[in-house]
Length: 113
Image 1 (tube, rainbow, N blue to C red):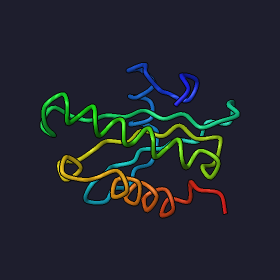
Image 2: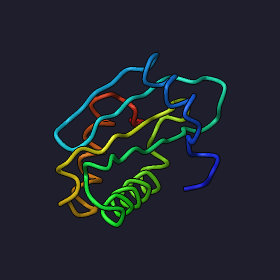
Image 3: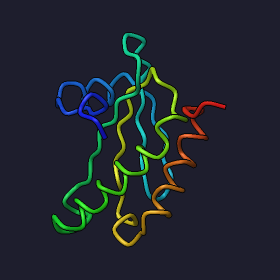
């Protein structure tokens, strides 16, 4: 995923948490906020230490980044999105994480038709 597509600043994370909307399933929590001043979506990932060791957390983040990369053309461009991984993701494979992410994005209508 390109750097322009990432949210890194803690201040931006906090803004999305406080002013955005959220939705969750068993594996992932999604926070999103409409941001009309940009021409593409941005993504922030959060995987807590309770999920597992560094190798496991990095694997989950890699899977999420790849899922966003594959869904890039389908996601509406004017949103900031933060994904928080929950415990069950530590035992999931890529296709399961992608399916869970797609489910959340479809439920919240963040995918183009």
